[in-house]
Image (cartoon, rainbow, N blue to C red; front, top):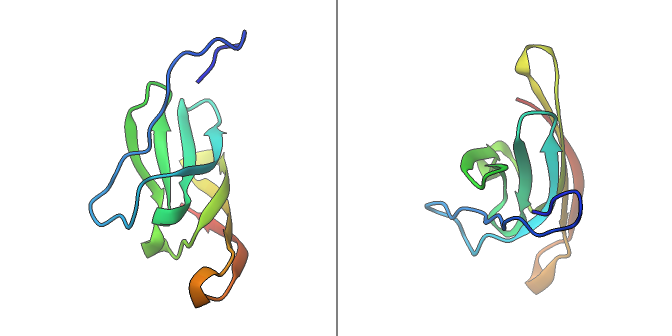
Length: 109
């Protein structure tokens, strides 16, 4: 993270989870309004992770059990009552005989 002047402040790391298939690697991210939380795509582990500005792990927003595959970008809008509207772009090129996969999925949480 950098401040408004471009000075480096701290680095955020994606947490490992039991059952994750690989090393956490960040792709797309978004800041969730004024909540102090960032949603980060961990593409290879099929999840969107929540982190606070001070690097604390705030859990998973979505995972493969929600139908997520290869998330590479995310947008989150919090509406009245705290409901989260989440749009996720999924993309996989189809290496090693797997079929390519490209989709936009919408979730209400």
